[in-house]
Length: 303
Image 1 (cartoon, one colour):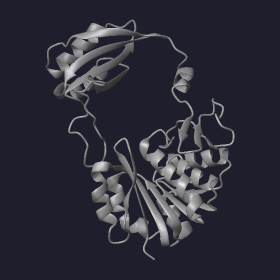
Image 2: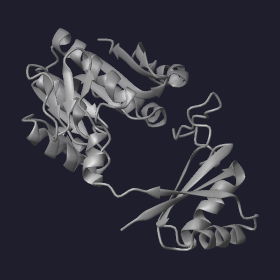
Image 3: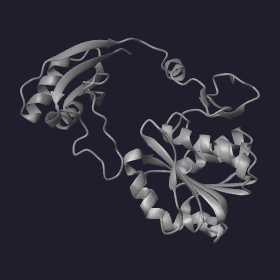
Image 4: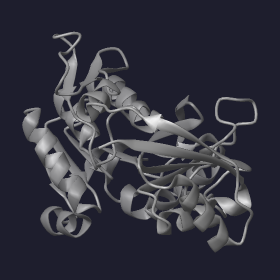
């Protein structure tokens, strides 16, 4: 089957309504991107709770429509414009070449080198360094492949601090794919538990841990409490988002053993002070490191 992309540039105010109308008019899929991407006018949008844009679009938005090659593309655009009550916008067509989509997708994910000696390696690649700490991990539904700055920051913290502090137990709250739990286990932490609200993430983490020969337990929050009671941990790591992290401050701090450490990420540099303040009555956090506008916060619980 062959496809064609219809590319339309529209103002911010029309992007969402036109996208919906294009789908109703026969588009197979519609995506919206910044028409100024890669220029000094590029506008970052963050989906962080409390920072969501009023409209999921940019001042100059590029709407990219995927359609069958043999449909009437002009009719799709005209019908969508009429439904929105706007003039028919100018558009261009570009062919979508036939591809081996599996190989193309795989080619976009190379091994990722993190810290001094951690490699995250998709299953279709060989490990670049057989003596490194290697995680075999394919991109999937659960967050955490090491490509995002927040995951990278936590992995770098673990690489430095697990050998130095020798924690006997570690809690990875918001474990996603299980990548942080697996790093901690491979670095020698005897007891590792991961928690996530998403059942798919728990399944993915269990699968990834078995595949990487890492013994770790994973729970949904309600099962975590039932199985662990009031267990505390020598190290707690949570890579989530600033809003949930602030709400979870009492719970996470109650899970830290006296003198134990807490490391948080998923926090933009501009949000660091607010998150630090939310934890101040239990633990003194500081910015441990920053990468691409994201920070990792860390501190030790007062004994």
